[in-house]
Amino acid sequence: MNHFTQFESKELGQELLDLAAAYKANPSLHARKGEGKRIGCIFLNPSLRTRVSTQIAAQQLGMEAIVLNMDKEGWALEMQEGAIMNKGTVEHIKDAAGVLGSYFDILALRAFPSLTQKEEDVTDFVLHQFIKYSGIPVVSLESAIRHPLQSLADQLTIQELSKGDKKPKVVLTWAPHIKAIPHAVANSFAEWTLGMGHDLTICHPEGYELDSEFTHGARITNDQSEALQNADFVYVKNWSAFNEYGKILSTDERWMLTEAHLKNAPEAKVMHCLPVRRNVELSDEILDCPRSLVQQQAYNRIFAAQAVLSKLLG
Ligand code: CP
Picture 1 (tube, rainbow, N blue to C red):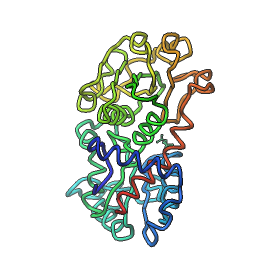
Picture 2 (cartoon, rainbow, N blue to C red; picture 1 turned 180 degrees about the vertical axis):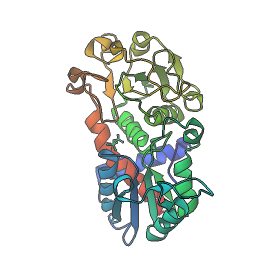
Picture 3 (tube, protein in one colour; picture 1 turned 45 degrees about the horizontal axis):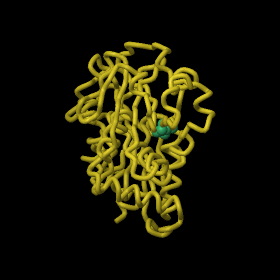
Picture 4 (cartoon, rainbow, N blue to C red; picture 1 turned 45 degrees about the vertical axis):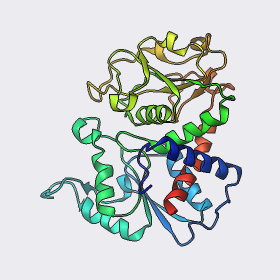
């Protein structure tokens, strides 16, 4: 594994899950593995969980983590090749990433999509510019199209709650939101859930089809009630339209998950990556009841990150 930016294989996924479970059982299992190494965590966008869990994970391996909130504290970056930099951007990615690559052993990057430049977003242009010019291993802390550390933590949570040999029914359901939200969490959840061999049903209103690159093999429906029947895990997430790129086509509050939606899914556990808009995406009654796995998912972010950093350290 040279970088950690997406799902690669079921074998590697299971290896990372086993390692994450081992770190959860004993966080100081390899407390000196990263001694003398530094990770640079570069944020072009806000974060709570990703920022703190990655720092804790690095600490638990003996690594030093340095966080740079590039959006607020760094120079405005120019990403385009051959740009004449006579406008707002101050530093070219070639120069900035080259410097960061010489300061750190691992670089971690959060870079959300524009949701306006579809062609650029779907190629994960900004992430790949950092990979290209830093010359060191890169970990995605959520890119334009994927959030693999979140997905690894989500798969760990599903593994912990799965019962015996029964294949769980996993449902990804769209939820309303007041803002245009990226596709990264939904894409990655589908990519990892299908990649790890689970059955996945995706439900959303018409017009909210995700990029088929991530959903091949899933059952896709516009009927939320039918999708939720006998579900074991229900992942709730908003995303903006992909075909009509970045648009909000619906705010239909009937799609907000409440206890009433789960009347035919008595065993269902409910997941969300957080942050969540309470009583818009998910009701208080769900978030505050034993069905909710959101705190467990967030806690597992530490061990998912620790497994990934450990694997990259070799
Ligand atoms: N789930 C998640 O990535 O949370 P943050 O945006 O707070 O890091």
